[in-house]
Amino acid sequence: MLKIHKVNLPLRRLIHTAHEAFEYRRTILLELSYKGQILWSEAPAFFTNHYMPETHESVWAHLIDLGPLISKYIDDGNLSALCREYEAYPILCSCLDMLDIQIQMFDSNCLFNEFFDCSKPIVEGSAMLGIFNSEADYKLHINSILNQGYKAIKLKANPDSLSNLLPLLSWVLSEFDQVSLDSNGSFDETSYTLLRQLPRSILLEQPVIEKDLLLTIIDEFPNRVILDESIRSMPDLVSLNGLDIAGVMFKPVCLGGIRPTLAMIDYCFEHNIPCGVSGYLDSGVGRYFHWLMAQNSKLSLRPDFVWSDYYFDGDVCLVTPSTVTDYSFPTIDRSFFKESKSI
Image 1 (tube, one colour):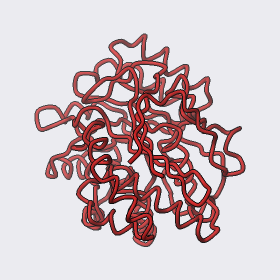
Image 2 (cartoon, rainbow, N blue to C red):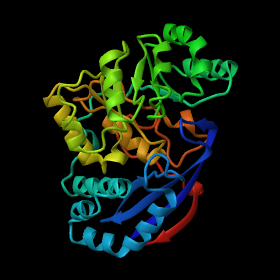
Image 3 (cartoon, helix red, strand yellow):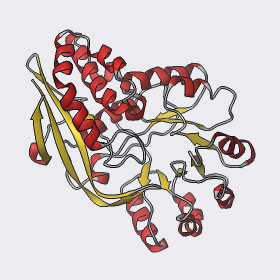
Image 4 (tube, rainbow, N blue to C red):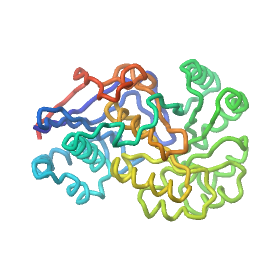
């Protein structure tokens, strides 16, 4: 039996990124009854297509349409083949890949920490902070992050928000081990020179999308550059050979799933390209697998990872230092399910 659930998670605060703002998180969970076990996966598409073409509603419709086919491929033991057929839909493939991995792990008696090559359960991640309209708001929330014990921070930014951040950066650098500015490619040829005002020790994550501008920043700016949106496939990754970058952050949801991401991590390890993993504002289901991936021994960059209680005022399952110490999957709270269908 395969079911899909629409989930609505309350956020602790408004999150404002370079392209949109939202007050709650809608996501989709898949629930599979398999040989007496319940397996879970997540399709955390956003409600708009600003970041990826697949949206919450389009993925929901796609899953309903494909339901009988998904069940057939599961019965045939060949769900990975369906992922390959729909590789043009990475968020869809990601949730199917997450299920397929668990099926294979269950059938082979493999443990989560073995499959993901986990090194240690306590992940030292980087906390993301959205855009605010005043220095006072930034100070309030940055102090909250410090009080929660995070030692690294990722500041979302766009050209309009930079002026509020600049007066605070010396203080932020003195408080955190690592500070990065994540622009989600929102700067362009008219605004990218504003980034020259930043202290050189701040990492620039995907400041622009356009390739020539990106190469200019990599070659001429004192700040080190991390790529994210520029890398959506293995050919994208291979094209980095010879570029002097600080590394790459991988979002499995955007790459078609866990297995394609693990393959890209292996490539980076073999070619001395620093890399880390980043989430997609996932619920506890996706966050659990993000936590597993963040422990992979071949990663060299600090992951963009926070515990469940950082973003959400309640979650479908809690991924915290006290709930995942033995690598068992956390208990699901179905009270957050808003709509469910058997497919």
